[in-house]
Image 1 (cartoon, helix red, strand yellow):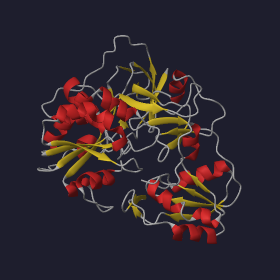
Image 2 (cartoon, helix red, strand yellow):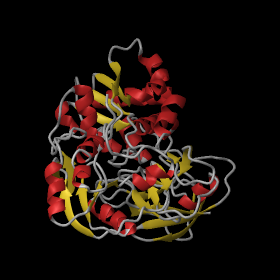
Image 3 (tube, rainbow, N blue to C red):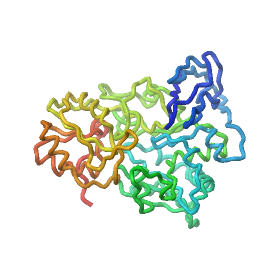
Image 4 (cartoon, rainbow, N blue to C red):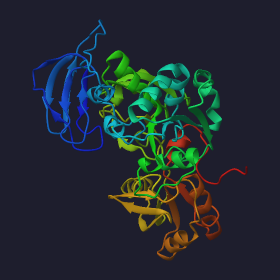
Length: 429
């Protein structure tokens, strides 16, 4: 089988390929190195390099029953181990972990983000239940590297059972806590995690360092332990496959999937998809991107979601773009698939432009969107497509239906595929 390794699996510059067509490579071998801010890329299979471009490397894998992996170099520095392993933020951001941890937050906090924010995804919870010891030890390594005095696992209150093993490990440690947060999107956003756990709301241009904190996804913490203790490069990714599947609506957690594996292979492994489908989403319903059957698993891949077909509605549509959800480009794509002409675009009341992207002033806490809905209506919109968080969506539903404007959400086709509740009104507490 042919494996595809894209060279932009991290924030920063694309990695530079250091292999050539025809070259034989061993599982775990470095095939691309960082060019400035970035991360090493390793092959997840033993095989022969088929082609190399400035975008990707293709490798024809061969059967390797030995399961031997080329280890990362020996080092007397944990930070160097993490760098050599090519670990990046696995919650979706992809920031190089060795850069994030290269800081001194004496007296501060390392926060494990185990919120698993996106609906439908379950691989973080499965890993936490199966391997709490590795996540605990990864936290201790991160605390020592950054000189943090405290650690905290942040998790949704509905998933407290998944934290039982971790709680048992830390019950006698005053320096490590577990914090439960509400089951709302986007409680896993970095600044929301800090606000909920430490009581400090950072500005949109402030980094966690301002709160003397480092935030790491739970799978990232697991990979830190693998790198330091097992000399393991980052060549596998755990993920969730869910959606319009032949074998039912239950999510399938796939552990240790080789990076570079084509999506088509994963879908075949779980029994195939039910045709017709609307799209294949790589990531979660809120912030995922459109993929194809040929698209490969990447370091930041959290979900593979083949969706039902898009609902059709030919009426003029207004887009309400939120910093917490789909981009305007993606929402325009969804509108086009629905057959809806876009006549108005508004940004969420709290969305602020920051470095060519939108950031929310206070993630998950919405002051109301009536002004935005009225503006879209004045421009001829008859329907609304929103990409908002749980609370913002709730405020939209307090206005749009009264104006007889049907409301759609960018997650509808993914969530409806498995009969999951759609994002509209919040339930009363």
